[in-house]
Length: 103
Image (cartoon, rainbow, N blue to C red; front, side, top):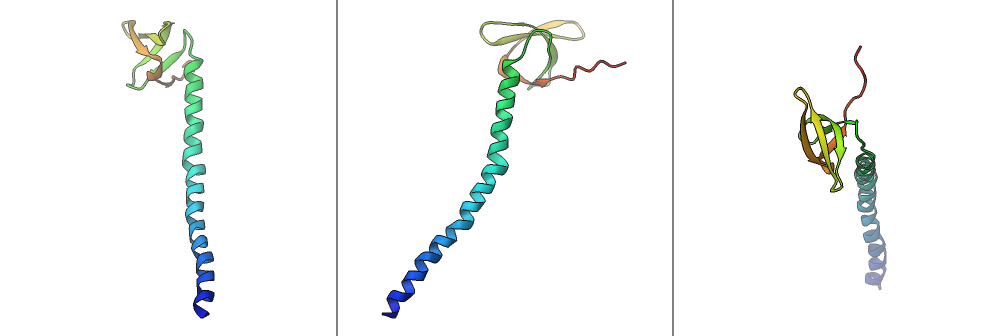
C-alpha cells in the first residue's frame, strides 16, 4: 500500500521538471527567433522597395548607386570613382547607404 502512495507524487513531480525546460524554450523563442524573423521581414521589405537612384551597400562591401533594375531581379550599380557599372543580384544588397549630404 505504501508503494502505491509513493508513486503518485512522483508522477506529478516529473511533470514539474519539464516546466523549466519549457520556460527556457519560451525565452529563447522571444529573445532569439522573433527578432530574427522581424529583421528578415525588414530586409525583404527593403529589397522589394529598391529603386533607381538609391545608394546601396552590397554584402561584399561595394557601395554604389542603382542605375537600373532588370527583369531577372538583378541590379546595375554605378560605382565611383570611375563610374563603372556592375551587375548584382538583388539579394546581395545588405543595406541602403547613408544619403545625408555633407556640407
